[in-house]
Each structure stands twice: as C-alpha cells, then as structure tokens.
Image (cartoon, rainbow, N blue to C red; front, side):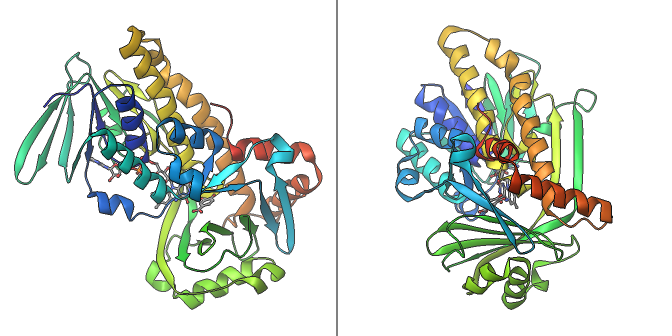
Length: 389
Ligand code: FAD
Ligand code: DHB
C-alpha cells in the first residue's frame, strides 16, 4: 500500500487531521489499534474551545455539534461554600462549547466515511521505519498477516502509550514530566446537571467537578488517592462524597442516579520535544499530556492538528516546507501555555498530601483574587476559552 500521509491512531487527533487533509485532496491512511466501537466507548473530555469548534466546522464535522452542543458563557469556581462565577464573555469576549469527545469522534468518523477515507482497525505491532529518509514506511500485523504502508510523511497521533514518540531516538528526545499524587474518579449518569454551568470545587476533602453532556446527562468527578480502585467506589459512596465537596446549596439540588460509566484517570503533566523527527510529526497526547483540570487535553490536540494540517496544505499546495519545518516550535509555544494553565488550576484546586498551611493560604489568595479582581478573571477566561491559534 502507498499513501501520502500515514496517520498512526484513530482518536480525535488522527481523525481530525485525516479529515482536514482528505478535504484538501491529500491522501491518508489511518491505522488504529482498537475497533471503532472501542474508540467510541471512551468517555473523556467535554469542553471545546472556540478554536476547536471552528476547526471542526472547517473539517465539515460541525453540524451535529451546532445543533446539540451547548454554548457556555461562564463557569463557577467554588471554595468551600463560596461560589465565584467567571463570566467568559465579560472577561474576554469568548465562549466554550460543551460537547463530548465521544460525540466529536463519532462525527469525525461519519465525516471520514462520507469522504471515503481509509481506516484500518485492529492493527498490532505497528513499527515506523526509515524516518530519516525520503521513503519512510510503516509495518503492522493484522489477522495473522504482516502489512506494509509506504508514505511520504507519518503523523504520530497514537496517544500517550503509542509507538510514535518512542520511535524518536532517546538522545534526540527531551521529556518533561510532573506526576500528581492523585487521580480523578469520573461518573456519567442520566440525571439533570446540578447547575447550568460547570462547577470546579476546591474543598478540604478534595477537588470535585460538576460537568455535563446534555440536559439529561451529567458528568461528575472527584479527586481520589492513586491507590483507590473503581471497585472501591459504590455509586452511593460517590454521590455522598461529591455532595460533601460541593457548596451546601448546590449539593441540596443534586439529582443522583445509577452510574452508566465510572473510571479513574491519573493526573500528569508531560511534554516531549521536539514534535518532529525526519518524516515523523507528533500530535496530541502522543507528545503531551495535561491534567484535565483546565479542560485543555482535547483542545491542545486540535490546535496541533490545525498547525500540522496547515503545514501539509502549504507543502502539497505550493511546495512550501516552511510550515513543516516550523511545526514543532509553533505548536510547542501554545502547548507550554496550556501546560502552565493546567498546572496552575490543578495546583489551585486540589488537596496535595504534601501541602502545608502556607500552600493552603496560597490557594485561598488565588481564589480570592479571582473573586475580586476582573484582571485575574480575564486571564483565567482567556486561557480557559483558549489562547488564539
Ligand atoms: P487519544 O485519544 O489517546 O487517541 C490515540 C489513539 O491511538 C487511540 O485511539 C489509540 O487506541 C490509538 N493507538 C495507541 N497506540 C497505538 C498503536 N501502537 N497503533 C495504532 N493505534 C494506536 N481531556 C480533557 O480535556 N478532559 C477530560 O476530562 C479528559 N479525561 C481524560 C480521561 C482519560 C482516561 C484520558 C486517557 C484522557 C483524558 N483527557 C481529557 C484527555 C483527552 O481525552 C485527550 O487529550 C485526547 O483524547 C487526545 O486525543 P489524541 O487523539 O491525541 O489521543
Ligand atoms: C470535563 C472534563 C474536564 O477535565 C473539564 O475540565 C471540564 C469538563 C468533562 O468531562 O465534562
């Protein structure tokens, strides 16, 4: 087989890149380890920046999002019983869209089907070859047979545990990592959201987040120790803990019900540099991970794809390679801003086992600033709704 751009990974990054390239007449083949059903069963992010919304529309995958997504004009940060509202429109003139990653992925798969794009699912033992030559290729196993795909470029969109990043030699790659001493236990339930807007809650018992997917589907998270297992948490125990961490008037309105999904995600900040090595370009979680507190993971994946797709369009359109040459530096500048924001909101909102009284005071002052100072709210809102591409 032969293509122009081989894409490893059929998550949001790989699908969006494939869609933008196919729309411009550039051939791609997407290689995905899991089945489509498996990819669509993963419940992950829920908040889209306006730049991500624009990109999905540009990709021809925005119609259902326009109909079913919920534009949000603000969010709450709670500090024990106090609720601080950040009005995004007042603070920075932007909004976000609440629309789940699962739905984004479904829309992208459907848009790809409509274009007749090539996806191969169930690939195993993917190996990237000859990345420093003009004729790179990818091999994999499927159904007991070996396969080979020749290409001009490879986009590594295969997430944190993928093979692409590790195909860059150790002496070229520089990794930066911070692992947080807790995880998030998430529950999806067919209940009305407790408030119309998201609530990020700082509480002595630990962080909590009240989010949503639609008027009858809620998504809630609580901070848990890394040693906790999903099986340790009955639905009743989860609801009791969530109520304890939300302000009392909010907790009183919480409608509970059976969980339809429950999972624990560890929190990590991670960047691998550079994003390009020869014919290989990394995008999304393959290159970087943010703790979910700032709702940046999926949005950063989308901004990488924006820069890389523009670079491929210039290369295949006018033989201009400057975008490909500049991709790593351009994307990393935005990635590090999102790293800072995600780290700072995580630090401001969680209980850290090692935190002293001094650290608690710092959290209090940060939240007081957001409550009292429009400039602090503007900075938060600019970062939350997304710094310009
Ligand atoms: P992924 O979604 O990881 O997709 C990579 C794809 O590559 C996967 O489909 C995988 O099966 C495939 N793959 C992996 N290895 C190979 C291989 N060797 N060969 C072929 N295919 C391969 N972000 C938020 O903003 N809010 C959240 O609440 C949130 N929750 C999250 C919860 C979890 C458990 C995780 C893991 C992430 C969460 N994120 C969240 C982050 C967000 O979901 C990611 O940033 C986003 O999925 C990145 O998209 P991606 O396409 O780059 O990577
Ligand atoms: C969701 C997840 C987040 O990490 C976040 O910051 C906001 C919303 C969610 O899954 O709805």
